Image (cartoon, rainbow, N blue to C red; front, side, top):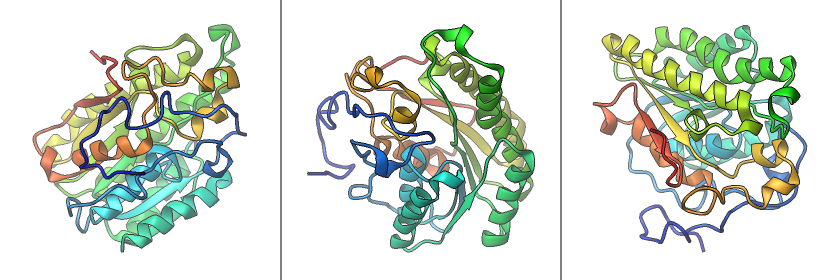
Length: 298
């Protein structure tokens, strides 16, 4: 039985260990194709009005961490625009349904964020729909595991990782900041990989390290405008991206390397994004919150 986020539980047993399935899915990965469905907080997250009336953009909001954040934001009172790839529109519509069920406005927008004009279009659409942007969550990401490391990473793959994970963040921030009033927040999704890189995710880890560095500088750059920028650094999280980008022999043990012995569920990440988006974190900027199951990020 699913328990809400306020119920005291043993964290090592709160979800199945390691918490993943054993069947790969076709990239980019759809929730409905997974043999073990993630928990996005659909039946457990309870809002307290922390984001009442705010307008948010969440990239990669169709599934995984993005869906969990969208559900939590909506239940905290925010209207949400989520982006997705065209192949993920079904998942995006499911996320939107949960947002509407929470009584908030949901807008879905397919967008390949490797293109600067599409990033600008996302921001323009948000401003047209909502009038302003109070929270920008740059969460969309690309990875592809390569067991043979450096030699297997093509220039095409490296370029795709950097364009999706780093360039898009830069483009989105450039376009969004003019529409963000004082008190607004930017939240990036980095990773434990930025601090403990795995050879099979070398390019992805490098991109996440860049996100950490960019976020720290961005927070200092924007604070005179009254805009904060912080990052959430997840450890292993069970999302469609995992079975879509990793071989089957790695799936059953995914997350077992964390000190807690299991992968996180997306629902366990969402409260940290809510905290950073809310006024409760008003004295924080240029910080990285590690949600890694015990793996250090310092």
